[in-house]
Length: 317
Image (cartoon, rainbow, N blue to C red; front, side):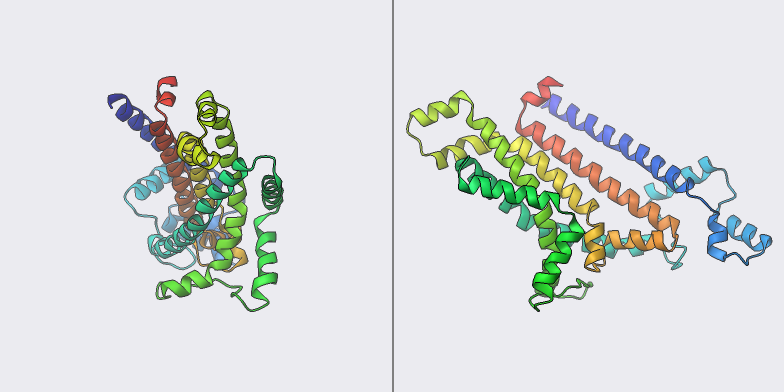
């Protein structure tokens, strides 16, 4: 137990360090953008005095390291600053968008995770059979297609025929059942993108377990193949499966930008794109850091769960 707690503390410390490095990278990336932000806000007709005034107001006249520390200190206190385009606190803009993105992610995960586990187990059960070959070919085809292409195909097949809306415009007052109906196409798009990866990893993990001697002993005892997979192989393949599921959940949160654009979904990705479009730098920085935090947090969670499920990993480190 002591080693486990020590491992978790080390992972958390490493996660915090990673986030600090990412925040520095985000800040430097924005700093490297060409042009003067104050000039961009006021336009080319602004006088030098007006530009200097707006630079003082936004703190752009301070040295870069001071601005970074001020920005990071504000983030740690939950102060994301104000949007330059909308003149509103960014935390008030991010909260409902993040809620929508998390809803879409959870909706997709509820479909994709059970589906990929079942398909992976069935593919390993009927290894090298017709089901295995068809599911693998479908998975490769699904992985090969970009999200926007899958989204437009689904809009053509299911939205233009009138079954589902092509725009997933929801708000806080939308009833849950209506939300599920409106968001079905973006959720299905993300499901098709991530299911293939999780299914193939589940299949590979179970097949590796099936090659071990104790599985062969179970076969010799006459245990049915389906029971061997569900009772003996799957529990021991949890660690790699949890890893790939967590990585795909992280992708769902950070990679929904394109899907949100295709379906006009009011999520965090759409907010970031709007921030880039209107050169709203504080919004871009804040949304980027939220995405980075989600990605690092889910990877950290996957690492801890996989280590707990397989204590041998802890001894190897």
